[in-house]
Length: 80
Image (cartoon, rainbow, N blue to C red):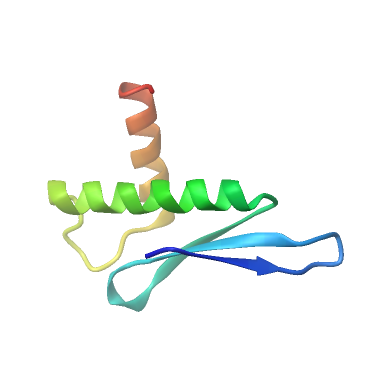
């Protein structure tokens, strides 16, 4: 389950989204808006669930670049 945390900075607060993965690792990204962080986290969780269901995650880890490729593929061939 993803977590969103508020991170205070001198230029204003930002929100950090963290999505846990297998093996205790996690992917994270920082956003200015909490809604953007939540949307990204939900999208990453959905992509990880899809990859697991399709058997695309054979190893213990998946890199962010792999996720970016999957997002591009989904957006490219299955537009909303």
